[in-house]
Amino acid sequence: MPSASPPPAWEGRRAVTGTEAEAAALLGWLTDPEAPRLCLVIGAPGSGKTALLDWLAAHGPRAGGRRRRTPRVLVPLAGQSALGATWTIADLLGVVARSPDELVHALATSEARPSGRAVLLLTDLHAAAEPAALTELIGELAGVGRVRLVVEARTGSPAPETLRAARRATVVDLDGEPAPDDDGTRAEPPRPLPDLSDPLAVCAADPLLVTTAYVTGTGDGFGEAGIDDHGGLRTAWLRAGQSLCRAQEPAERALVLLAALGDGADPRLRPALAELAEGAAWRLRWARNRGDLTPAWPGPVAVLGAAGGPLEGTLLVGDRTGTVRLLHEADASSAGRLPHTVPGRVTALAPAPDGTVLLLDDRGRLHSVRGTVPRAPYLERLTEAVSKTLARHPGTALAAIAGSVVVGDRLGSVHAFGLTGLHQAASHSGRVTAVAAVDSETPFVCSGGADGTVRLWTPGRDPRPEPLAERRSPVVSLHATETPYGPLVAAAWADGLVELHRPEGGATLSFRPGPPVRAVAVTGAGALLVGTDESLVCLVPRSHLGG
Image 1 (cartoon, one colour):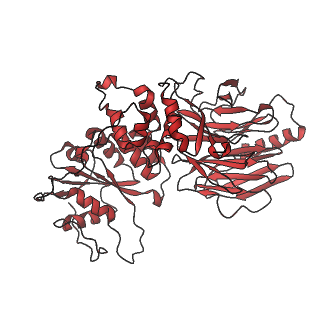
Image 2: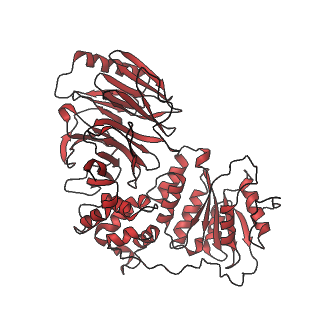
């Protein structure tokens, strides 16, 4: 165990009596860059383990200190499943993960920023619903450079020895006598399970309790191979769980759960959830989830487009293989496929007003799929010029409006190729991840970047100095269009959030589907489309309905 002297001033906070040395050791571990990334706090029941971690979560730097403290996040594990803990940790660290493996991968591959680093304080591992699975997850997380972990477990439980065998670890052992009035556990009465088949009950209950029950089959009376799906509620919950486990009103949770509900679910669930979701800011128009048959789920979504002109009322949905499907906007039923021969993966698509569809491949090169209407020669020349430019300088994002093609690059610049020449703006720090263009009374360009900002720009003028939106997470998709309600901008970030903005002023609406968001689009009627690997969802703001 490392040794350290208690700091001379703790801003009036002291560790629990009898644990000053252990508290100092923890602080020494936190400030030692060479220390293992995993610290185990062990001891007998009542030895003060949980109180020590509570203190560490609240402990601040000395008064007048200039050093920014790494965030310390307390995550109680008592009664939790590995999946519930995964969603909690992912949400706290600004990533999206559908499984423990995805959490480890997301943290290992996401952009490492100082604001994204954290110390996870995991309490009561011995009292978790799935201690073995959580122990395995903790061991994997300890190998990720973005986080440090302090794990509390009772002496004699399997987890400490398992973790010490798998990873280097600092050990803080509170081996003193238990406090006379403390048995070492949090004094909370057992929480009753809600009726897991009742959508109103699960939307109002503790979401982590619901998650544990659905994962483990608690209260089902079935074996592991026969866990009750509760009419489809369980499948929907596990699909959208990271969003559902966030703090929110039951109406908002009902909307997310409704959007994740498959078409084979108990027919009584949909109207019950829709009624509860009346208080949310959105109305669900339709949703197509993995496994749906009527209409069929269109497959994983990688890119999205809402077409106008000859393709008015048609959605373009591209998957990871490069296939682009056409769907009817009214209900997502099939309208065929886009006839193109783009090799590799399509990373962006841009329907032009004349029916031509421009595609960007994973090498950053431009491809054009002609529509049914003959193109004007000047548009052909423009497209050819952009294509030649991208063959030399690959693009990272693509948009198109009448007479203009907009491209983003890996250096943070946005290029608007038009009939009157080329306009450029250095809008972002790092790669441009998405662009959109709006052909309104005052045409403008939106761009999103790996720097997390969404910016507005009118070609020929300086970009607006203040971003339209900004988060500590890369923008993954962006789309904008003119609607009867004015121009609307949809943006999605890598942390799973989707926002609908009104650049001319008005409330910003948000939605989190649960799985990682791959693409968003806004239809000409003002509806929001959200695409993931699991689903394609169409939402309408209640304000558009007069509600």
